Length: 360
Image 1 (cartoon, rainbow, N blue to C red):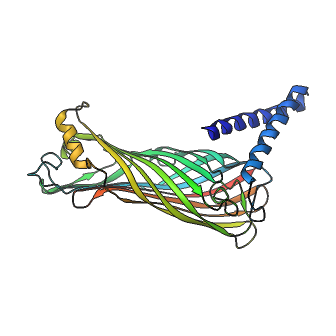
Image 2: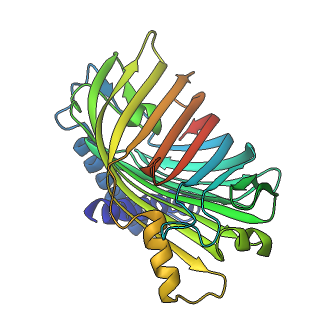
Image 3: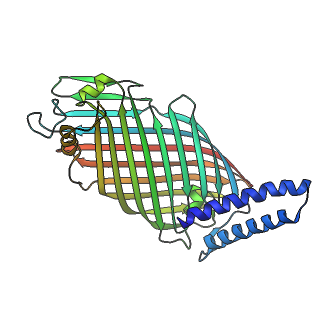
C-alpha cells in the first residue's frame, strides 16, 4: 500500500511539474518553481531508494526517467477441462459423465501505448481484429520486491466439447462463449545488488554487466468462462459460468545477459506449486440451488490437489541512445488444478510484444 501511495504521489507531482514548466515559460511565477523543486526531490528520493545498496558497476539508472512505449502484441488464451467421473455415480456433470472441453482464442494482434516511470507503468491494448475487448496491465518493477497486474478478455474463442454419454462432439464457435483471465504476479529478487528485473521488463534501469538471481514468486490467477449458447450450456449440465481461482508460489531463476553495451537479453522461469484453489459454477437460471452446489463441489473438487504451475519470461532489448530503445518481450503463464483420474482444468496464457520506446 505504501508503494502505491508513493507511486500516485510521484506521478501526480511529476505531471504537475511538467505542466508547470510550460506555464512557467509563459507566465513565470515563484510557486511554479516550488512545485518543480518538490517533484525533483521526490524523483531523487525514489531513485536513491531504488539504487540503495546496488552495485552501480552492474546496475544503473537511465538519464531520462519517463518512457512512452508503442507496442504490437500477439496473445492467446487456452482453457482445458476434463471430467472423468462415471455417469452412474455422483461425481459427474449432470447426466453426461465423462466430458472434455478444449477452448482457445485465436492468436490476436493488438496495438497499445504504455507509459512508464522508473519501473511503474500502465498499458492498455486495443485489438486490431475485434478479438480481445480488453487487455490492461499495470506493473511495479521495483527492487527487490515488485509485481504486475494483467487483465484481458475475449469472445473470439473456439473449440470442442466431447461428452461420451452423448456419443458425439459439439463444436464451440466464435461468439458462443467468452473467456477472461485476471493475473497478479509478485516477485522477490534474492540478488538485487547486481541483478535488475526492471532492466529487462520495464527498461527503467540499465543492466551494465551480465548477472543472475534466484527469484521467489507468488501468483493469483482467476479464469472465467461464460457460455452464451443454450445448447452448449445444456451439454454441460446447465452451467453457464465457471470461475477458477488459484494461489501458487515457487522459486525460480532469472538471468540478464549483456554481451555488448546497450543490448540486454533476459530469461527467467519460476515453477510453482498450487497452494489453494477455489472454483464455482452458476446454473442457467442464474440462482444457486442445493443440487448445483453439490455438483460444483464434486466436479471441481472439495479439496485442493497439489498441482504444478509455471511462469516464464523472456526479452531482448537494445538502447540506441539515452532516449531511444526497441525490443521484444514475452511471458507464458500455465495454471493447472485437479487430477487426471478425477477432474482436470488448466489455463495457458501467453503474450509476445514488439516495441519501440522513447525516454524523456
